[in-house]
Image (cartoon, rainbow, N blue to C red; front, side, top):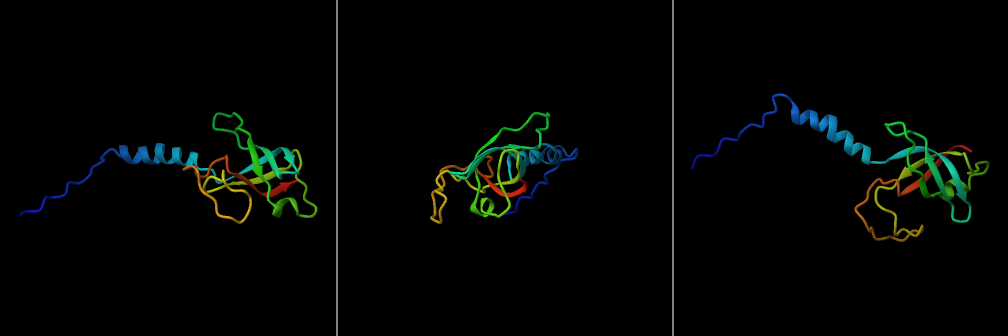
Length: 130
């Protein structure tokens, strides 16, 4: 039995390549949140959470949505001389997976959604200016 000859995939005008590079890759990249500079709107010292306004504007010039219930870890709020307050500039990171069921301790927790790198899973990583 003769083997079938494999056909080449041809994209002579680079339509597929240009779609992937110019449309698909930027679209996917825009959905992945890693880090962002923010301004603190309010800080709750009892729950160690804050509301924060992302500083980079959207591509259309509008402000981004406020981040709510941003976790402020002990490694940030316990630093001598650093105060988190309204108008502090902070560096925020976003969890690789959803943190809905994480209670803040060392116990493993169940992931509830397929959500990744979401603005809903924000943690203050540093205070740039207090």
